Amino acid sequence: MKFLENLPRFVFFTGKGGVGKTSVACATALTLARAGRHVLLVSTDPASNVGQVFGVTIGNTVTPIQEVPGLSALEIDPEQAAEAYRERIIAPVRGLLPETELASIAEGLSGSCTTEIASFDEFTNLLADDLAYAEYDHIVFDTAPTGHTIRLLQLPGSWTDFLETGKGDPSCLGPLSGLEKHKQVYAKAVQALTDPARTRLVLVSRAQTSSLTEIERTYLELGEIGIGGGYVVLNGVLPPAAGEEELAQALRAREAAAVAAMPGSVAALPRDVLDLKPGNMVGIPALETLFAAAGAGMPPGAAADAEVEDAPLAALVNEVELDGHGLVMCMGKGGVGKTTVAAAIAVALAKRGHPVHLTTTDPAAHLTETLQGSTPGLKVSRIDPDAAIQEYRSHVMETKGRSLDDEGRAALAEDLMSPCTDEVAVFRQFSRVVQESRRHFVVIDTAPTGHTLLLLDATGSYHREISRQVGDTMGFVTPLMRLQDPAQTKVVLVTLAETTPVLEAEVLQDDLERAGIHPWAWVINNSIAAAHPQSPFLRARAASEIEQIAKVHTLTDRVALIPMLSGEPVGEDRLSALTALSTQPA
Image (cartoon, rainbow, N blue to C red; front, top):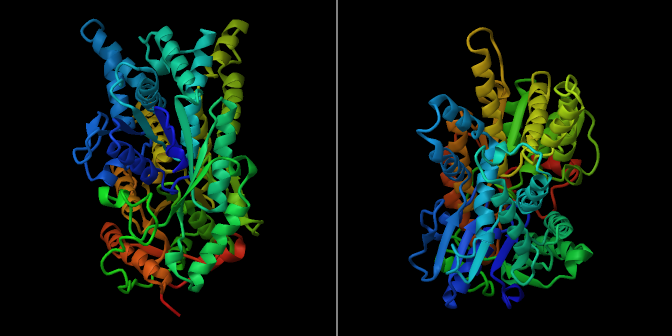
């Protein structure tokens, strides 16, 4: 593996959701530990599944992997990090300040901004605190899907710039925090990230156009802040062992065409290719095969027939249509096909004569590439964080700043430059879209799980604040209340028939249930079993799906199954075909 040669201390794996970053990161950490290195594997993904891959419970503290001497793991859990962060700030003054003031401080540290900064603080400490982590030869980062990762890696510079002015509101960092200390830590983090002798960026992708375009965008954006020298890993490439049936030939042709058209900036980088394996990458024995050639270790019963029920996506669309209007939110782990499913549902409703607004909150989504043209009755938009931030700043200056003097307006403008402004701005636009669903259909392609939960956290915070202010004096309806109402909102969880995506979707369902939001249906996308392959290799992949398909049926009473297709599901015709497919062989 080229990316493993002369490996520096810090290694970042990033890329579009669902490309196998966690598998590659875990296999890398395992390989290094087997070679006698001391390794800390860190997940910065709010929807982390490192613990699931190794079959152990990993939390917000460093946890040794007992089966692998020299390997420890850490999942930066946003909620645990936020709680620890609040306690670090409040503990020194507990007993010194009145309870009312302590409650006020805690309230000020309860939003999604604090959650992000708390996670970020732990991340920067890993880069900057040489003494605390001196025992590790390598720290391997399994990052969140691309948009969240870019934000995370840009934050050291953003907060450094913000603190350099000395005029901004430091509330998101904690009212009693030492700003100079933060400035020094963030500066050291920036130095580590931009030094190729200390940090290596590994761009993980599938041999798919959208994934390759995504790693180019990541590479260029991170290059702008001085993070370069990347390596490319093409994961899950269909091997010769998959045979020569029509489906295999079509998939190979798609992969070859995507690689041939790889953007020049990343095509020139050192590259490794990992074959698709017949089984799932869960457990140490499976991880040990990832860097080996495909075909070895075919699982028992590989040639068994994998029978699945007929569960077309059209059945869900029929039920959605009955209401005449409403909100459909497609949610799930990155890379499972949320954008495709959301676009297919929106196109189907529009072709049936309904006005439909299809939008995305995902910074890495490409709705225009998926649709490849316009559909009568279908409006397409994107909740663009940059545009939302600019609009929000302008709104605040025109309202809150209108009555201020020049000095006050200058202070307000400085305050609005805080990176914490982002979540508030995006939430405002999200709320507007939710309101639209009272009149017509709105389909939302959400960001990958962790980012979406932060957005819903902001929605919940807004609901609690409105409830506190209004009390019982008058009726009100918040965006959260609309999301909780099954008559107004249908949450569709999209997954793959694989162990990790199903586990993560189950965790997401539990998180939503705790927020009073009840998922309406699940969609299992890109199923090899539903495509009824013939080669032993693909039948082994199909057989590995059956257990996960059965598990999904225990988690919901409404399931749709989309077969793996020989052609990319892009454009109106192919998206329409998704809502006409049967999962039974012809």
